[in-house]
Image 1: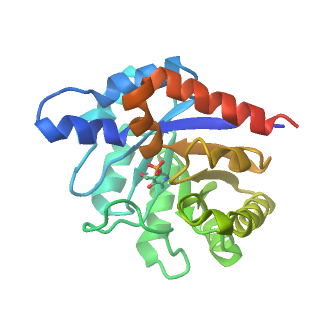
Image 2: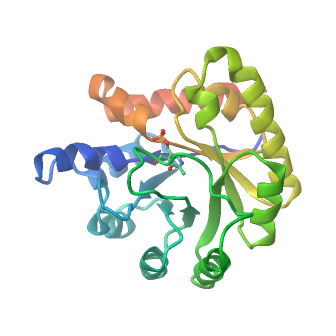
Length: 243
Ligand code: PXP
């Protein structure tokens, strides 16, 4: 089976830092430790209100961490211009509402205005690969391919955070989405809400090429240490992916 890339989202290291207004703990240092412990890449979401990650954090990860950066952002003029300048490996386009606690759902590609396609064209011209965070809905997946995305990121939140009794139905929906994505010529990423308990069945899907994990991973690190948590996730994913 193909290697599953594991991208560690360090946003909530910045949440902790910002709680006291200083420089500690540093999300760039967290990114370095995660990569040393076996992560394949780093994810950062620069939100409009800069509630966790700040511009300088992203610039420093680009300059100081030798691993692919998956840069999550809303498709706005401000963020597209920022991404054109820092040129991450991937831009993951997400919907963003100022009042939400976290990204609440996938991007609605079918109802997006003309700026989404322009944003994708500009990012691709800057040699940034584009993924779109969407629900596992075949119509959305086809629309993402049509509009020029090279990957989608399947929203795993309903599966991972919903009732345990509903998980097998949610997994079937995600599997169908992953198959549809690959059939449409897209790479298939997955993320949101994943934990030790829920990552295995996602990693076991051969169509999924990358997972990104943040909140649980950073929270568990308070108890066990970041490197140990990254290593345990890596092991769980490798075991699930071994036929
Ligand atoms: N993927 C996307 C597009 C996200 O917005 C987030 C949350 O920032 C994640 C993955 C990671 O989710 P979590 O922090 O719940 O692991």
